[in-house]
Length: 317
Image (cartoon, rainbow, N blue to C red; front, top):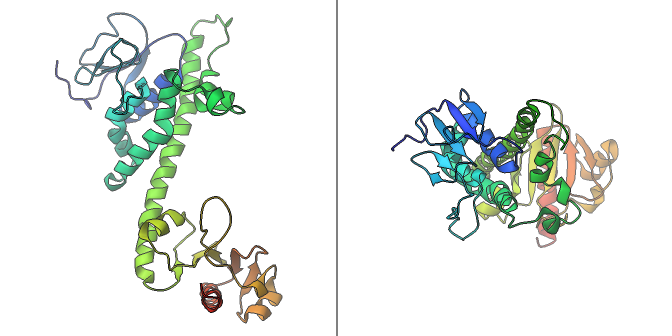
């Protein structure tokens, strides 16, 4: 049987009964790509047999990309290249991840890095927990019951809820929760990729200047490190219609140590006091920690940043 992997199916088939994070999250991926397909939760032998009108996952005891069946419960269960086990979520992400990102609106040039980081940081832990290769309570002793797989499974009906359709209704409710987490994670990764592109362009435009000006607040440190822009000391960004910030660049992720601090004479001052100390009209605030200051205009912010650079250079930075 040869089936186009992305040919729109009529059914997305997974098992009935109690649900787990892996088929829930797989359903999130597949319903984004195939919004018109119907989720069919069943263990009926005919329904879980590969056919042209369906994608089968987490059931069926087979893994065959051409036949579009993605289970991991069989004796010869699929493993990653490093020997770690797949759940259905990992298999679905492996084969449908690019189509999901396209359907989500992620530009093709950003998809490679997002595919990898989402797999490593989100998909793989779900795979490991589902296969018993990672215990949430062992990985996070204080937060074991609050990890995403267990939180999603907590949405299953209680043991004595015998109402007809209770499990399917719970699945649908849990699906919306799972969707929110997947989409939030992908959106943040896509935003990080967009920010990196903009910061890289700003670094190029700044040239040898030790002040980086950005068009808005955004994550910038990863791109600064990636670009090897070790000469940069401060970042200027607009904040609202009448405020601009002057911020330092942290040396590492573990503390607030900056490549250079704002001038000591500015620490904790506001408005007229800060204007007098800095000599910059429009200077509004400088944090006691000297890692951020605020000005009322771009011109004032740039001037404050230039003064901060001059002081840092006088100190040999």
